[in-house]
Length: 384
Image (cartoon, rainbow, N blue to C red):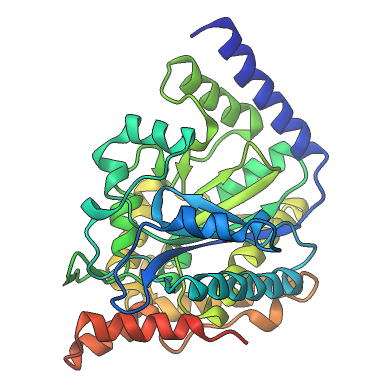
């Protein structure tokens, strides 16, 4: 590694720490990823650059970005002061992107996977970042035709942000169970509630549930090790399901499948946000937080992948299992003290059936993959 590169990543880590130490607590931003679909066939189509060009000069332009493949678009809310504001921005961004897509004969898909699209037919977008990922990851990145929901929560204090990440690790399986929306992929019923998690989280390096770190120093030492050993050459190559973001002073939560229904997307984002804030408050008050080893968290992660909200999760305190929905109800009770102050309370709910359950119910009724996906796309069209 050259001296210039070494100084660059050292400066990046120092700048990131300073940004965390001066951050405003609990601002929030949401990112949603969508498949670009031919309006007639619902096939994925490589037309992102066309949409991006059409968005220039509009209110959507600064919030629309490319994400790996040319048949995908991401919209971002931007930083918001509380959850009610970000929820309104989520609706606005969806409406803006839908309007632009319809003007170009496109629809949007927002389940975690497309039921029949071939990864071989998707084109990597031509940017330096994604060309580099293509060079590094090859088949791993080619297969990643998946769509997720990410939430950024600003946390003041570098050590405190790492501690919130450490705590949020313990709730990743529950968040995935709520969000599961991807049983259908590669023209089959996968038998999983979240096939997206197997495709993305299980294939990418430095992905899934991270280790817990001993404050910013422990996190920084690990990232520095990755740079020194040329394991990474930019910070975005840390694909963990929760991470301190090195470009923004936020804890980014990345475990969740995309959501067809706007209301369920807002509810899921509210839960992620409230959990992060509740963890920070617990740390401030000296309240004990779980610190489970990865080998135990992986047991619940698999249960969430396989059975989603329909299954059971392990209650590690009781040494037994409980229905996933009951576990989510427990979390809603736990975050209640911060839900009102952050504007999240009116959005928090456990869905009667999440997107994976709805799709699997239709499979059992004999509906075709196209019929099922068309219903999910139509659900996503409803705004307000």
